[in-house]
Length: 154
Image (cartoon, rainbow, N blue to C red; front, side):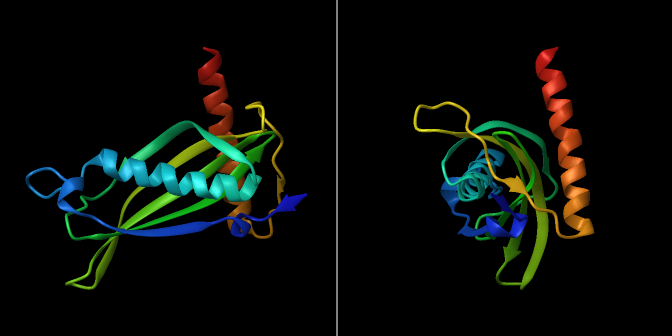
């Protein structure tokens, strides 16, 4: 079985509240990370059609602040797969509803492993690449995966 990146992509829209922020109204990075992990998990489970668990989060970038009242758009897609592992790219945008502006505020690459009913790694579908942009993301994801595996061995 094979799937394309579009077969499992997801977008979740969340409003940021005072409980997500410090006294100055800046949303905590941890609150954003929670949403990144949740949406990446949805993509991983949709792609693998089984339980999938977070193995690593890397290249996490907080590019601009997010404020109380902003609406967060968390978009995720599969970039690369290998055996039972999937790399999910997540982009986060914040919209200031009163101004009608939307800006990229962060991104991350999250690796998941698909598990069978016994909690053991299980194969995932192959990733079908249909265009040059998907190929570029696949190649970059492969390099990141190789780096992660090399770091784990050291």
